[in-house]
Image 1 (tube, rainbow, N blue to C red):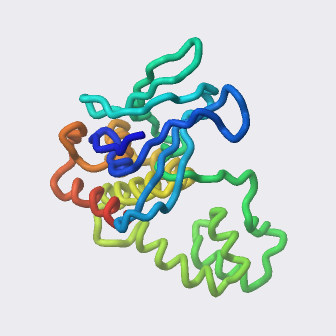
Image 2 (cartoon, helix red, strand yellow; image 1 turned 45 degrees about the vertical axis):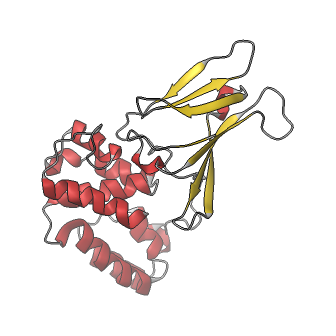
Length: 232
């Protein structure tokens, strides 16, 4: 077992990594377990990694290069190095364990089911005639839509931040919270606000560090770091 102190995975710093020899009573299984603690040293969550290897993990240690290395214990044992993944519109990386739903807990309301009050609130918050699933879901309780959507509109479109800076904050928040839908939506149109594909990747990599010398301005680096501070 080892505590991660490297710079390649900022969100993992201070996490405990433990190699597992098996999953339950199943033979020829294993995984790497990531244990997250709060500032009081109390465990707050666990995440299982690399279960698809189907090999017992004998040891895990940090390397001098700042990466994590693990050794499996099988006849064909291997030494593996864990590196950051590169992705833009795919599901965000494993910052926290998340259970993906196959269907919504509360489904969007079909247009055929809208009553007069619901039609009015949808027309109010989607004057272009193209309400998204979020609005069609909240329309089930029109008063709730009236409370939520002014705030969403302000954050996404009307704040004093430049569109580029708003997108940086939204993308970083989506990455940290594992919101695949929000990430895919804003990453796919980030170029409209002046962000390049490489800059989108840099949002996922996190704040500027010795091993992540991004091209952010001082203010942009502050915005991304602030999102991380609020998340923690």
